[in-house]
Picture 1 (cartoon, one colour):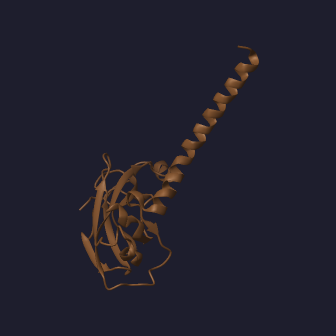
Picture 2: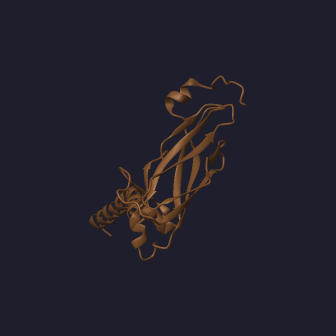
Picture 3: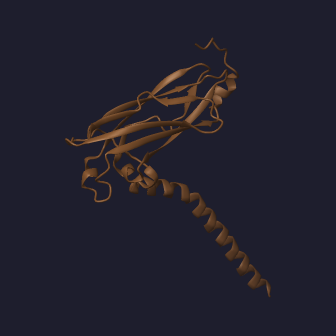
Length: 191
């Protein structure tokens, strides 16, 4: 092989590596977009306001809470389920408690089951994907405001769904720099 052929092969290999890097970088935002558009994996929609239409049909929303391995918080829904009319706005609360003697930051991810319902489950306000920082012994209630889109009843595949589970999982995250710089907090006795 001559030097010119080697240079072409090297240039092609560099191009392949750059293309693979670009595709890997774009995979996460593309997958997030795909899930939001299709409701795949129980991904919900985000609504700017309440629904204009409220049907006389009922839907029961169950609330589930989990913590990832290594997350020391106690996390639970304040109420286990809520029955409301399709299109009606619901307001539910989840409670997080830090029973440890250290400051812990966490972020929640969510999903909706069955997966088909995700496309019709619209969250107006939510604590998910927002970093929460709890001091030692701190207990907080976090709201989620939502409705089930009335278009659900017209969907050929999802129109029969009348029970939906909204599930959150909290993961421990790195403390924000300003919190980490403060060092361990002085704690009061936990009741």
